[in-house]
Amino acid sequence: MPRYDIISIFPDYFAALDISLVGKARAAGLVDIAVHDLRDHAEGVHKSVDDTPYGGGAGMVMSPEPWGRGIDQLSQSSQLHDLVVLTPAGKKFNQKMAQELSECEHLIFACGRYEGIDHRVTQFYMAQSNFRVHEVSIGDYVLNGGEVATLVMLEAIIRLIPGVLGNPDSLVEESHTLIVDGESIVEYPSYTKPASWRDLSVPEVLLSGNHGAIKAYREAEAVKRTKSRE
Ligand code: JCE
Figure 1: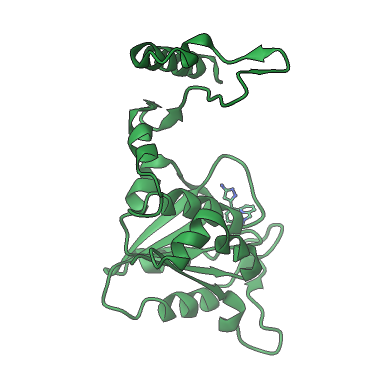
Figure 2: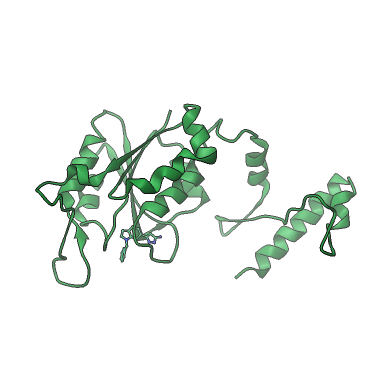
């Protein structure tokens, strides 16, 4: 079973992982998730995890020592560890990366705060032969920390683990949906009952039972969406 360790100064963010599809996957023993408080690895009366930036500038930077102790404690086994460091400067997360990470047996998510983590943490683990380090951004906007980005990534990753989605048809169908620029997934619009709602009717072809016509209609709609979005 794949294992996902998360290190954060706000472990309460991850209560969401007890809910819905991810919560069920954990309860079914399909994935193992553990959340760790970075402050457990801080020293001194104040259990400080940050300090002023070398070279000056606004805000605070997370000190490397608690991160080193926290990550070391989670990587005692002989296996390969994939360390995900969330940062707005990272490689953009997409469906392909979700697929690749869903094949990893041990992911460690480092959720920074403030202005981020001392860069030597990334440097150090990149040089370890039992680690692969991934600096990842979930999009071109600035969050206050890596917690929400980790929740996004885990949701996208865990639904790809075999057995997690009750109905594997939905994954087969996804593989048929349009992928633009090698990543963007564009789908056709969906409808359910009632056939008419607030004067808006469901496109006739979807009620026709003509599966060839339905497939052609959906592909045409998917292409339209692709061309109209920014
Ligand atoms: C984070 C911060 C750098 C200023 C740790 C932001 C990821 N796609 C993403 N957007 N934002 C993040 C992200 C991830 C981790 C951290 N910050 C805030 N970072 C410059 C502010 C701290």
